[in-house]
Image (tube, rainbow, N blue to C red; front, side, top):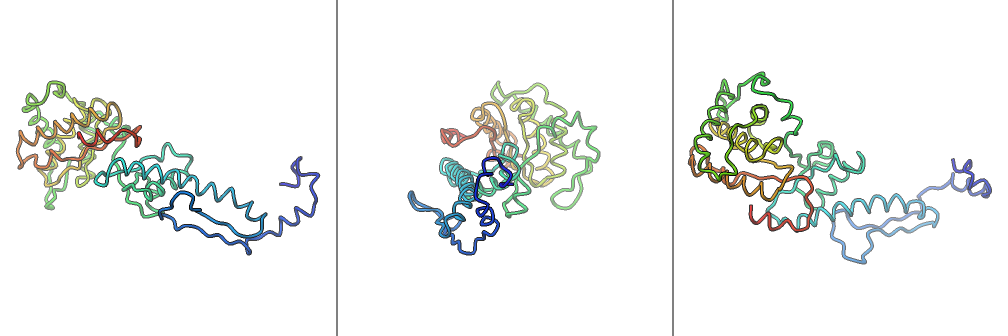
Amino acid sequence: YLRNESFARSMDSAFFEHLAKLDCSQLKILSQLEGSVVFPRVPLIRVEGPLLVAQLIETPLLTLVNYASLVATNAARHRIMAGDSATLLEFGLRRAQGTDGGVSGSRYAFLGGFDGTSNLEAGRQFGIPCKGTHAHSYVQSFMGFQDISDPRLQNADGSWCQNFVTVVKEQLETLAGIKEQLPEGIRWVETNKGELAAFTSYAIAFPSSFLALVDTYDVLRSGLPNFLAVSLALRQCGYQPLGIRIDSGDLSYLSIQARKTMRTVEEALGDARAGGFASLGVTASNDIHEIGRASCRERV
């Protein structure tokens, strides 16, 4: 390839012969262990060997190290800002710099302090814990309970709830009976039935890890009450829901209002029916960076 490039046609042919015989047998690479802490002005990598070989591998080495350092450092900044108690999940594959950048980015985010990834391929390759929830498109694919082909749910004790849909409907009516205890801005008139069906279907599939994405239509007046209805139904079947995920809007305000609602429901229905609801997880995603987020965490 190089011989045929216009800029190389005047070059000595012996140079091309020399390139064809190059190997790395005389090359020595000394580097820090991956994942170790390195202080300013301490070299990450030192390369020793023939000048031409060292120059040729300079670019691939820098490409590998610079991207890894960028992602790992940014992940570490998020961890420092969020604190040790927060759970940080990496959902960046769709916005990554290509497929290779997405898989390696998941790895370096985990190395930098994140707890898990939504990237199953990164989980397969590197053993990173995989965590996540359903998509907005999943919620939008449901029109109503008629889209649930099998309404049965196996209870935590091994017995069967023959019609989980009926239990969910009953729990939504229960919530309607206490909604006047909620702040006026959180009260709902009618929730989206397709969303409720989607949550119900998801709970049937994953009763032990139910975490619902609640912002497809209206977080406080549809997504949250639908989530709570399905969660109460799961409690009745012996399972404890995990929480919600909010992916758009004012994440701070919506998180705080959601927490208030969860606390109110637990207080109104008691431990037997809604124990633990006050401390259910609130996961925020989308356009989050490490600057200025501590106050939101403290309030929620």
